[in-house]
Amino acid sequence: MGPMKNIHIIVATGEWEQDQLRYRRHRLAEFLQKQPETKEVIWLCPTPNQPEKSYTTLTNGIKQWTIHDLFPQKVFRFARYLDRFHKNKLQPLLSYLKQAQEQDTIHLWYTFPGFASLSDLFPWNKVIYDCSDLWASPISGKNSILSAFRQTIISSAENRIIHRANVIFCTSDYLRMRIVDMLGSKEKVFTFENGVEYDLFANHQTKIKNILPVNFDGTVLGFIGGIKPKLDFDLIQEVAQKKREWLFLFVGPDGTNDHPKFKSLLNERNILWTGSVAPSEVPKYMNLIDIGMMPYKSSQYNQAVFPLKLFEFLAAGKSVVGLHLPSTKKYAAESVYTHLDTNDSSQFIRACEKLESQKNHENDVLMRKELAKTKNWNEVFNNMLHLV
Image 1 (cartoon, helix red, strand yellow):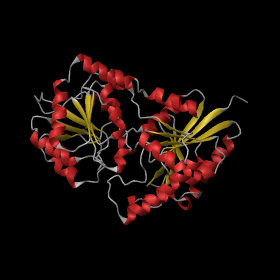
Image 2 (image 1 turned 180 degrees about the horizontal axis):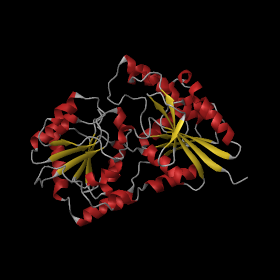
Image 3 (image 1 turned 30 degrees about the vertical axis):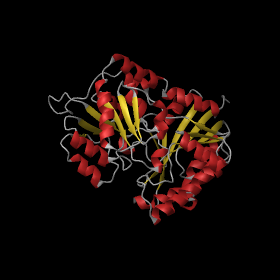
Image 4 (image 1 turned 90 degrees about the vertical axis):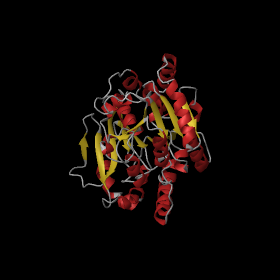
């Protein structure tokens, strides 16, 4: 018999390729996959489509194991948090793991509070909760009877996972404090903020062609990532109308469900939206940008957020302006990162004009890169793994 190897099950929000976006959980899965003591990584996720077989192997070698949703419509997603709708569907995975458990160590990683029953259905070596969001809080900040029902179900599922977990990682101190309150103890709860694939952004010089208007050589303010209702579209529209000489570039899929405010924003002549792009192309778009923007609305949900983009912009040598993101405040520094607690458009413009005047100073570019370099994903995950 060889030495014991590790099998990691990662409970994810959706299929690997969904949205073409790469979140923290994708990077965690790939990091674990590369570890010499890993036997395999299983990406366990809900899917609205009826899968043909229990699992498929992705090109990176990770096994994707899907659990069919109750019904395809979004409104039925609450079933992911209620045992009776998925307990039976988890059986094939559990039988598979039972065979492996004699020679392997099996860890369960939750990256969202779905399939909570899984934590009790198997003698896991470790249960880990990597919490990156205020899952029970509505992303749009709107409250309704349906969202209250959803919140109750998700909170109860999350509570079970928190009490069952051997170790809990949070992407912001806000999330950590919240979980410590729920647990009444802080000994197994740690903050690990999001990192960056530093080399990918820092050493990439090429710009994507044919995106900016011909002969445009003004300042480009850029947002890269999923475009969601948590962004302040009104503010950006106001700024775009006041500063016609600036170009506002949005790169990423529309996750707003055709929100009228996002549509209205796209009517401005100095707003450009590329739609979804392949993750490998992101650095080339990053090089079109002068100032990175993270224009979030003030909401409970955004109190907890630590945007993936902050260190990506900085790794590419770009300065950043962020709104209503308390978790990022401690990185505010002259010509590196400006944090604002207001949606006042003239303050936003002033902050950007200041960054605009320093955009290519060599020392500033270096300072931005130095900060990002201390936040490499591999280091973040290595430190987490030590605690598992």
